[in-house]
Length: 122
Image: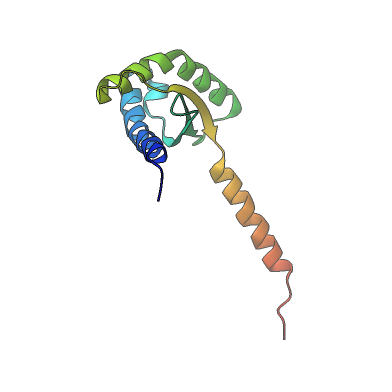
């Protein structure tokens, strides 16, 4: 059975995963409005939230620009989330691009390579 603190963290992560895209959609910046949030992970007792953004088809320069813009609007996003939930305080957002899909594709390719090298046993 999970502890109450773990349940609170999971609940906060789930709420933020829904609210952050809503907050982004309310912004004037078109490049931020359509970002896809792939995951939110709370750390340090819900003081920090690592927000993972889907890379989609952004090159390195665009990713750098988007992270800079997100850092500038983080406090606006935090206020939006706090107001929506009636929270006194919202976790501090740290934005990162999600590499998990690339990692998964790389692992799949490696397993496929191994599979091709193996000779069937007779």
